[in-house]
Image (tube, rainbow, N blue to C red):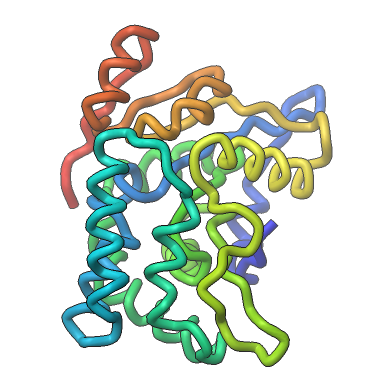
Length: 244
């Protein structure tokens, strides 16, 4: 489970298990669901504009994005590795502070009001609000300070013995089927194994099918074409949350 800010204590106190001691979980994807766009893509543009990332990783990322769009099989860690070439060898504290500023300048303004409202409604109803995301951990760590997210897990990059970032992913990116695994680890740690149930899930992309299909009430949020077709076939609600 990712470390979380002390400020979350108050909102976590809203979680109310049912009469059987079961915590009812609402899980949210982040990129494309809670926010407009994709935070790692916005980050690459931010870095490129400032000359902080090389041309070679940018070209590799463009090729990766093309393959991803058309559902070609690929290594999910590859894109994260290319982005973090900009931070390789730099102190973790320095990079985390940079990503925090980036989030404040470019990501928080992209938060969908309906996502925030849905999270708050779940929290006020006593449900546990979790966010699982492929984005980088320092970005989502900043988001949870401003949004009604009670627990989160996201992609963590490896830090070497000197306290500097490498461009390798720690474990696996929180993407596709790994979101289900990460959610289970997070909820088991927070609530105890067997003491929670995934009732609601919100996501926008076909790669989130595994996560959505595990929920009692899946929701396709502003879905991309493939997920939209799946949602219609499965009879899942489609939520067209407006842009921020």
